[in-house]
Length: 348
Ligand code: 1CP
Image (cartoon, rainbow, N blue to C red; front, side):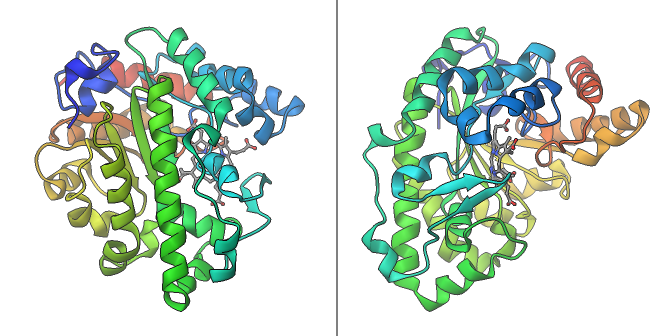
């Protein structure tokens, strides 16, 4: 567990809420807050593709700060992707707009070229961007670094891109368990180096996205996903930064998730925060979980739905307000402005 005194920005409400401490207002940020719903992001996309934007220090810094220029968010999340560190493992990845892996991992033969990179080889452009960002953010705004969780990354690099059911990776776990384990371990070790680098460069908090664990039973989760998340957490044990774990679609896994040594658990919109918190047990802050669709509702309906989330979150050890998944690209920025005002003006 991280101590407040070890943090670089001990007064930032987001970081205090992660540790379950009192805050003047409920802190908030929005998953995918830098992205296509913002006209200024779409403008940059006319000149640069996603890889260039996310791999050029000045550009990734600018995009990270775009939402903070519009809205008084309590945290910035660095503009990268969960695929960003995988280039250094030997994967050839494009974006169209989701990730497309030219050389998917399909079995033992691919162990030949798979690499666990040295820490300094992983995304040096991101390190440079984080140093700049940490210098630019005021003390009350926190900087979040992130990675994918091994199982979710495994899904993409075995499938070769996005999928509804990721049947190829789920088959590989059974057909080639040893090769699958080698890949999962290499993914975990690379994320440890990558997350440590992000903290060292200036990230105040770290988040691990496990977007596809909803495909697994609890038994499968405990075998193929959870041990590798634990391997990452073990590798971060001496890093003084709150860690958030987001098992999207994982309501059926919360008892297992409660065993993870993380400060915050992200909850998607399907589970009320009070129920999630009871199942996670004491001492864990919850993050979430307004339905992203609520941003398309009339202002009074949006506020009513946000109020329910705030009341629910008030029953947990700590609450970081967020959407229950990434913001939809058709969302109206004015509705986001309204939401931030409402959350910051809400008092228990
Ligand atoms: O053309 C574009 O604008 C590219 C779209 C895009 C963006 C803006 C991609 C491709 N990635 C990103 C940035 C990104 N990805 C961030 C930035 C920080 C922020 O939140 O503002 C983050 C945190 C991610 C994380 C990410 N990427 C996840 C985990 C969260 C989740 O959504 O569940 C996943 C699964 C990805 C893979 C990915 N990258 C991009 C897309 C479109 C996808 C989904 C692909 C699919 O499954 O079909």
